[in-house]
Image 1: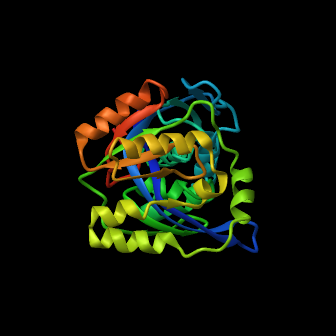
Image 2: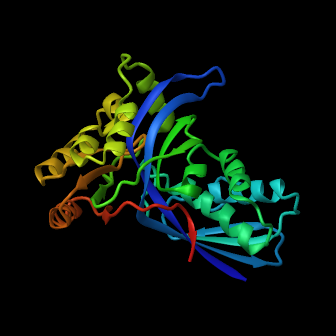
Length: 289
């Protein structure tokens, strides 16, 4: 049996790091949004008794280091099932090490797909619980939409949808960000008011000017990546209503009210940065095709 799933990327409309917790993790406040930029995950059961992975994207590990293998093992453990033979093929479009949660979304899709493949009947809450044990962004990638995420990022609150906009995402091909290094630099920042609180108010107001003028990311502020600053500048020159870095980087997104301006920006950036995409916000997370 074979099951295909769409695993969407996410962007962070705001991201505040509120300090280190006693358990070593960081306390976050972030507004996350799924977009229609997808990896395709294909699950096929077999008689091997092992979890195997293939991927079309150079540099993605196809062994136990891959988050999809971790997700499968956690799934079988949570369902108290022996590890069954399953092959996971990742047709990757979402850039890696970009702050777009491509890996987390792939892992989320595996949990959802295995639930369907093996007929285990997990509730949404049970799938979220498995996801949280794999990574902080995985529960969000299961649900998707527009969410306020707090704690380590796994506590979610639904927000009014972001809609009627066009989003250009651009990943500089020479830049990848170490999450550990990014957190070290964020820890050195001076305290500041929480922009995420303002983003939540802006989304409830449904005022695009308020939303796009409140885009903020502590990692962008701390890292000051020259390529990120250059891409953001070009997006704003192309009449983006607002722009910012996603996650711990290095992908940059621009929000446009005008589709034609967004397309022109996408085309101009793609000439210099091949991993440039035009997307829209979506209201869901991973889905079975």
